[in-house]
Image (cartoon, rainbow, N blue to C red; front, side, top):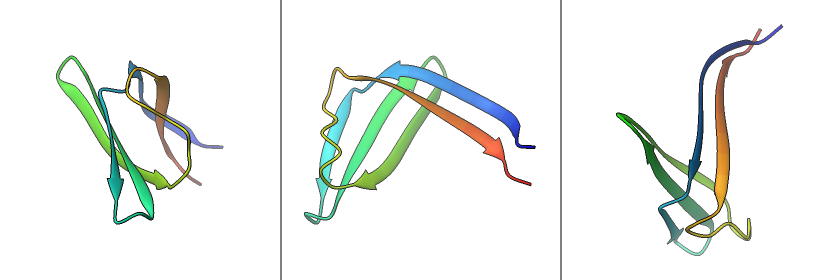
Length: 58
């Protein structure tokens, strides 16, 4: 069973194209922020709300 470490629910502040192959998503929630690459064509844009969950896998 996976153990949840941390969760962020936040509005994307920035979405950037990375070499035409990936989208880089960025947002900040208080002192916590994330910057994560996802496959190109995700359709996500600045202003979209996302949830990022960090879990320890078994």
